[in-house]
Length: 256
DNA sequence: ATGTCCCCTTGGAGGGGA
Image (tube, rainbow, N blue to C red; front, side, top):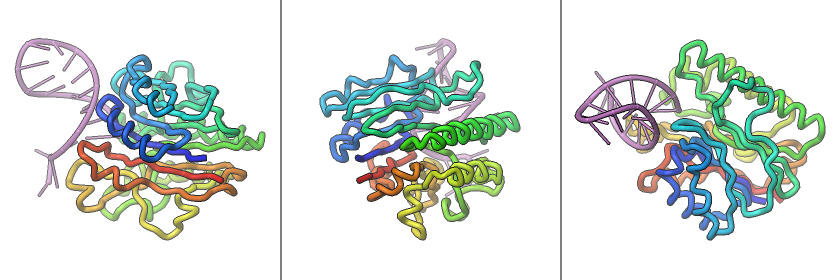
C-alpha cells in the first residue's frame, strides 16, 4: 500500500505535474492540498486514464483538498468533525480504502489574521486531535496525511528559514502536534529518518530552494498497526526542481 | 532584497494569502 500527500498550490496550475507524478509513482492514494478551486472545477477526469478516481472538497480561491485513488474507496468525511457549522474552509477529506481510514488535511497556516488567525489554527488542531483520539480509541487503522503547517522540532527547518514567532514553530502549535504523537500516531518520515535533514517545502522567495532553506511541514502520521507495517517514508525532493513547481513536494509512505 | 507565486476583482494594477 502506497500513500502520498502533496500540497500542489493550485491544481489548475499543476494538473500536468500531478498526472506525470502519478504515472511515475503510482500511489494507491494521493491526497492533495491547496487545490484552490471549487469542487466542481477539480479536473478529476484528467486522471482517469491512469486508473485514478477523484474526490475533491473545494472552495473558491483558497484552500481545498482532494484525494486521488486507484483502489476502491468510500468517502467518510468532507470536513473535520468537531468544527463549527459556519466554518466553510475546505481543509479535510477522509476516506476508507484498502482496509484503512485515511484523512487528508490542510492545516491552517496561522500567520495571517492576527490573534484570531492563530486561534483558528489552534482550534483546528484541537479538533484534529479530538477526532484522531476517537478513532484511535476504536483501534482504527488510521493514517493522517497532509500539510500540517507545523515544524515539529528545530530540526525540521533550516536555520534562518523562519523567525521564532512564526506560527509554524510557536510552542502551542508544536504542543498540539505532539498531542497527536502522544495519542499514538507515528510521524512516519521521522520514525525512519531520525537524524536526517528532511524538508518538504521551500518558499518561492529569496532563493530558498537554491539555498536549501526548507521546512518539514508535510507529514504522514500513522496509527500503531499501520506504523508496524511501515516500509519507507520520504519526500520526493526532486519534484521541487521541476519547471513551475509547487513550493511543496510530495511525501510518499509505503506500507507492507 | 519589499526578493515569488497564485488567487480574486476587474478592465489595470493592487490586495490577500502563503
